Length: 111
Image (cartoon, rainbow, N blue to C red; front, side, top):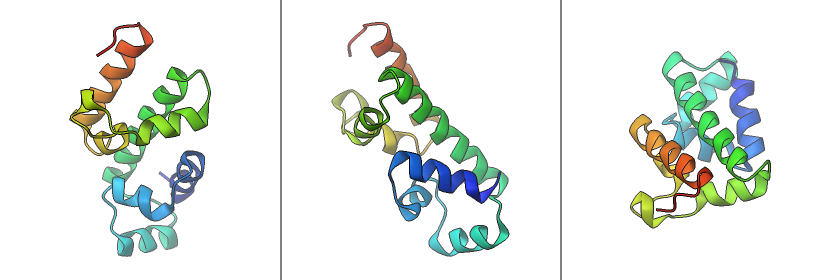
């Protein structure tokens, strides 16, 4: 996946490139190399897709309100063990928990 996709998601989420890279487990040094190369490695691309998928679901949950989705993604939630959806999105099991939570919220099942 291109480095530009990482930059775009970072911009849309209103984050710094460094903060997004941290969530994706990309070290500052590797981030600089990827910028020069113009591409992410396969595992980094997978993590970027996961974050993008969760953020897309959050935007749907908030009916297209990007700001509300960003705020929610950064909010610590008791149902997630006082972690934020953004923090949970660092791992696939955590991301699945966030997806299930979004599904429950969309269907009016409050946790």
